[in-house]
Length: 497
Image (cartoon, rainbow, N blue to C red; front, side, top):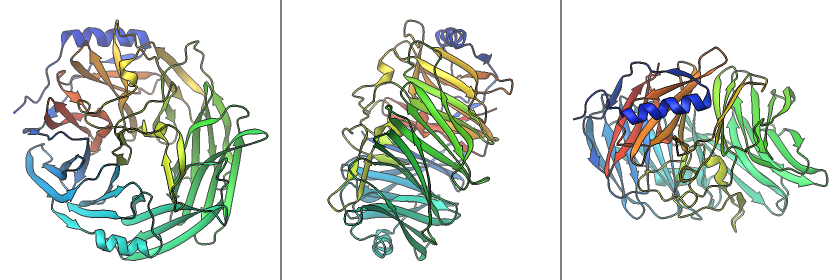
């Protein structure tokens, strides 16, 4: 059993003040409540882990190991290990693993790359599992014929939404299909919509179900005028398609992404363009509500990472990797992709026309695994890499801007180890830290309502390694994340104030 409050290193405290002076943040050192799990477990040598918090009153850790059965560790809300469950399924190499949360259970979806077999389990709060693959295959077989690409699954107002896209060579179009199903996997709605796609010059970047009957698509392309970024809105009921396109000239759009605000039906798009960041916000008809704007850098040195806090109606941290691509051995977003390596910027189709989108850059936003087991081919945390922090208003104007060289001679932040959380409608950024060779730490950043970024040191036990990108909110009050020590694996809960 571990103490409620963690130990803290004097060296860590000294280095913490150095980085604050370098960045120029407002500093806070508050009394903190940090609770560790009352019982750890010896984890098998595993490729990745997945934390599923708030399953009823429990929290689950799923250990994902290639060619081995899946293990589910069940913790109570007070972080007591309750049970260990085993799924009678060996995880194949090159598999996608996705979790879709519902009120008192979640669905575990597994798909092996290029396979037309899609596996699904329903897992309750106590870790009991129900095999649902046969029912799932019958459901998707009614709409998706021999689909070998990984499906997008999400909780849509308590129903399971399934989205898949495929390229139709004879039409020169992409067809995006959506199924809504109830908790027994009976279909409630099934729709398909088509949009033009020039396979030779266009790249599909994002397909997202928004609202009740709309699919939004983001794609890049090029023509004689330069590089283009197009957003398309397709009504699943009528088939009506609306679009808007932006031109960046000779510089391409890199890692474009949009997020949708259901409260006012706006879409905010951002992307790297050369040494700048492109922003725009569109209304429900895809007209510019906030005109397109480019955020430039005032610094001579191009930072390797750029963290931006956007003061929208809801605060939101955005993360951009502005240096060279990083190839990760374990890719995790909402999906855990277990590959030995991944090509950067690859987007294409398999022999059946199913979309394969292995764009590595966006996955950096959520990359996880076990830090002591994952192998990095070009790890930014093993290099001297500067980090830029920016505070933006709701029209993308920069309110505050700062940069740290992140020089290992004084201090080392771990920019690829981070989490973005919203607690009490306030957005927080958590960054990993390293003090010396074997000491770990966590730094929390947020807006202090005075047009300043405030940095708070989280006084975690510095011998553990923290899987920040699996961090999740509990009770709108705590941050929960896994930690590792050698082969031990457990949970830590941090009060966010």
